[in-house]
Each structure stands twice: as structure tokens, then as C-alpha cells.
Length: 158
Image (cartoon, rainbow, N blue to C red; front, side):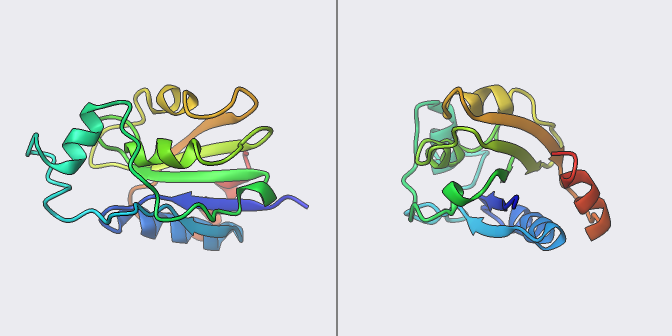
């Protein structure tokens, strides 16, 4: 039986809402990617070049520590991986998550929330954090309200 996982990182709650709606619509397990140290409002101030998020995103080797490594990745065939777009790509904590598990033979469908940009080179950036046996597929930006039927139809493409 095909088992799906919706894993997501959300700093402000927007991506969490999209992920929960998707998991509910497709009957998937839900897993929140949490940093060991939670982000504060000041950490997320993208206009401050010295804020935590700005420093992490300016250093492509940054790998924020995860709060846990308990995602049920091994039991799932397809992982829907959600995150907000930061600086035209995924936050570096998503790389931390990808580098913490074996995704060999699994399909990773990325989805995101964004204030205005698309995926850009996100897929290429994330491919560097998984084995060659993993398949990352660009999904869609899940801003706004999508019905359960729309989400289910979209997910069935994968």
C-alpha cells in the first residue's frame, strides 16, 4: 500500500496551514520540521542582514539543528515537502532535514508558500542534499485556499 507523508517547515504558520490542509485532503501522515532553537520574530527579519535567517540564507552550507529526527520517512513512498520560499529557495533547515534521512527510492514532491516568488532554483538546491536514488519533483506554490478535492487531484499526479 502506498503511504504518503507531508513534512513541512513553517516559521509563521502559513506553510503549516497549507501542509495540514494537504495532509487532511490526501490522508497522509503529517510531520513538522522543527528547529532545535525556535525562530523569533527578530530572527525572521529579512530586512536585517544580521538576523538569524539572513545569516543562514547567506551561507549555503548552513544547516540549522533539528529538534528531532523522528519523521516516518522509511515507511513512506512519497514525501510532500513544504516550506516557505526564503531568498528564492528553501530555508536551509530543509537541507538539514533532507540530509538526516535516507530518501533512496522515494519521491519527494516539493510545495511552498511564497510572498511573491516562484520556486526558482529550489529543486536544484535541494537535490544536493539527497542521494542520487531520490527523486525530487517540483509541485506547486500553495498560497491561498485550495479545496480538498483540488489538493487530492493534484497529489494524485505523483
